Length: 637
Image (cartoon, rainbow, N blue to C red; front, top):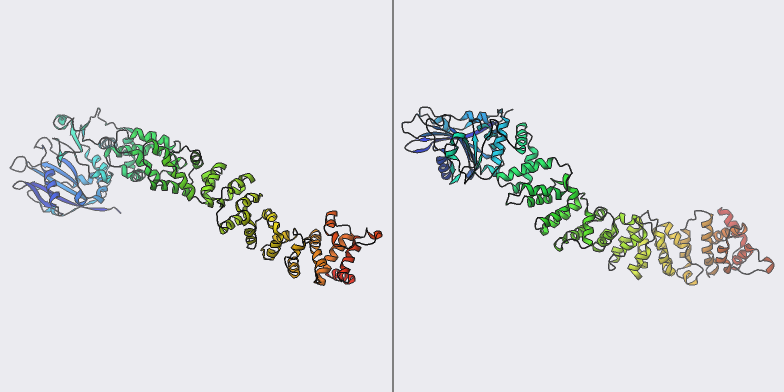
């Protein structure tokens, strides 16, 4: 369904002087004064402009734009009178000017003093206008080619529709500055300034054109010639495919201050649209420099801030994002503290590449002093998940990064590297970290590292390591802890303390592994806990094979043979039965035999070979009935 636009109107003419005769809208005093001046005759007579001329100008006070047709009033007795019919558009309706033919048909001269029709709004329905592409392209070129007043030589009156169509797509910032006349007969002024755009017939140029104050556009052929950017822009306008251009200009809106800057943005858009990742940011800025060399405003800084503040250019330049720092240096763009934070945030939130190269420059002192804040902020704000991206796991960068931000130690990527690499990084951790923080670090290391990096941790923690390990192993550890054994040597340094805490260890495999390394043949170790506690420890120790049964029995033997308190028949029979059977079948190695033979009594020389006899004698000496031990063990089997 076609849209309908409501357009206010006004009529000016002679009534005891040139004045407003009718209007469908209330106007402020300043608006009336401007319309009175703009609607008065400007060099027109009964011969030089029979169709009248079109004038356009803004009423910015209340967001309006005026299109006015002025005719010579040859029906009036007084010479020099004119009729001017003005259409007053709300700024939000300016896009309807693309229906140029319909708008131009709305203009009408008053008939026989009938003015009432101008006191009510008119309605405009959407009706596309067929446009002369060459003329539209030429109008676009001449509007946006200069900021000086433009004088455009024409051979005919057929440019009005093209001007209206161009206005319908003009950025609002520029629309407030744009005033025009479709057929200037004298040099037109508004508020003391020359009109920004005047179409002038060739034969009248000498009367209108001011070389000192404006720029002349002369046609050298019947078909107006336009540069490539204007041809492409005109083509896209007619096809209704300017959304991307509008978005581009909106993103760079802070630079869009003049007509020529819009020209530059259009050219930059067409260049940008064809880049497809083939340029770095530094290359792109060389192009910007050529486009903006005539401007006092900094297109370079504007694009720099857009690159920083929005994601518009990310698909093209994210890989080169950190070149912004070098660009700021080259073009003397001041990087504020807030800018630095934006740079850091973008690096951490997007997959910005070449960050390691940037940090490499930092750790080698290549960056300017004022730019060092950026890598330092980046490292301090980075999370473990960012470490791979920002360092590419380059050793020297990671060492510096972890030194500055200990939280980065929680990156799994660190513990996929070599042992020496991991140790170097751990060495940079702050020794004064709290035990709670170290506990988190060790828990993480247990879950990810498969290298023996315990020495590096021990160097950092010193005497705090063993208490920390004891506390740590009593908690629920990560299931994937293939390297937990590397801490055994530190726990076993003080076996009395270890055995006092061992029953509290959360994981059975860790508890069993340590228990089987404890020297139960050492009297101080045996006495560190009550024999009942020892038995509970061994009862929790499930043997997975015959070899483990032997090792458990060997560890339990001195507890049975050396304590005053007699151990239960169940536990005693287990130790006796396992060792007796292994000895009888010659399944005890020399090393194992050496560990416990001193616990067994000597026998007659002729029975020295009989290790089983020595074992039986030992249990008899402790008051056990050997037959009952055999029976109890066999019943368990």
